[in-house]
Image (cartoon, rainbow, N blue to C red; front, side):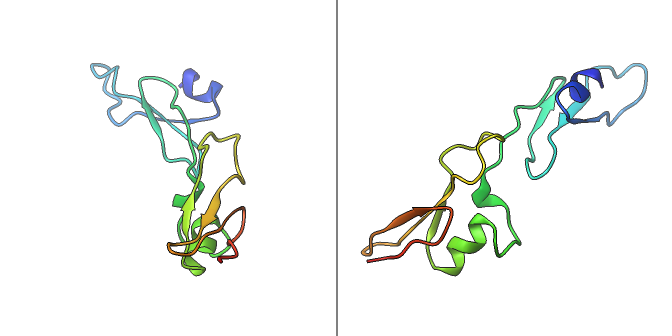
Length: 101
């Protein structure tokens, strides 16, 4: 539990039997879904995979018919996602729908 708390993560121990000591996991805080078996998780957030939110990266790009890409999925690197126009159009912009030409 201490390893998880130290990193701001939740701890999940599916089998609390005294004979089962190595099955615990650290779980990242949302929107990250990463887990670490027996250690702190390496938490990442791909902003293009946060679903069900019209104002989030995937919702903005999808509504414009564009591709979404998050070049840096580190938790500390939010807001760097881009929308890119589908071929044969060109255009790409960070944090909003692109103007395609």
